[in-house]
Length: 397
Image (cartoon, rainbow, N blue to C red; front, side, top):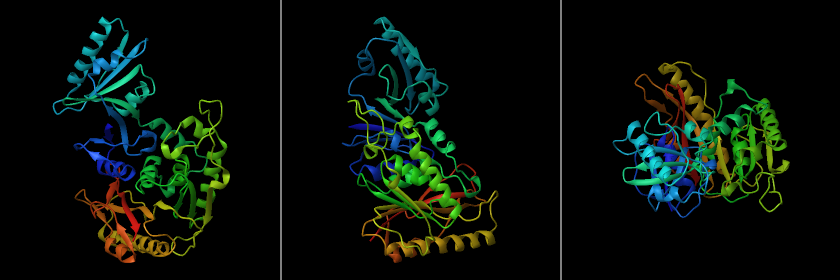
């Protein structure tokens, strides 16, 4: 099937996530913001932290597709990603479709374009997520047309991040969508895989892995963080939060207790499907099994301004010692080909570039393959952020 993914702020990370999850991806073409590809695998955007919109290719003209919609008012939005697209071209396409539909006796509302493309928020809040057949977003890329089948639920991310009972801004806030990406970069995993986060903090990676239907195991050197993770995961299990979010990925089957459509309930996660313990990642002996490792490692000192060279050198040494110590401890406790995805720090410099830790050769000597297409890694950051996250994708040799 032909798909189109509208990528997030760091498109290289978004593409890496898709290619890791769906090994049969066949790239049709590439641009900065779009990722047209084909795959035989069904895809659900709720699982993808790096994809803003997901659309499927139309095999017929857009109008023919719209005329098949059942009776009732139709809402149309058009996003134009063509080379010479503008707010005007997108609006003209939408109004042209409306005029013809009205001639066929249909009631039509057009979502107004502020730019050539509708924002994620505009698509979501106008119901153009593919869940209602009478609310449709069409995507134009030169001569190709797509129909949106999923929009990243930015409200759900914010809700499940802010509603957690135990949060600590001082230790850094790992975005839920980045946690999803870290898990997904491990590649396809068995339905009941057990994911380890040895730097679990407040449990964001563990939370997202549970929502995907995995079992989770977290450890942290801070007893306070261990208690925070436990409290957050217990809250997740006890509330109806999972049902309200409606996570529906193939790997998330059975996550929520909700109607299946036949009067029975889906089977939900049990309290014993997560374990959180106090432990130093450099020396701890984790219980088995460990099917995958996804984590954000120690990011060092939080900087509000660009560090001077002496500070940078100290931070690289401290963070590098912890990362390499952890990976050395882990290597003897996991099986061959076990995926390990870890976010490590990179620091902003005066020239606008980020300075990374030079530890990849040492990581390989420990017994890991570095799977990044580029040994430079994948950087996740907000504009102007001093400490970025450099994502390393590893597997035990």
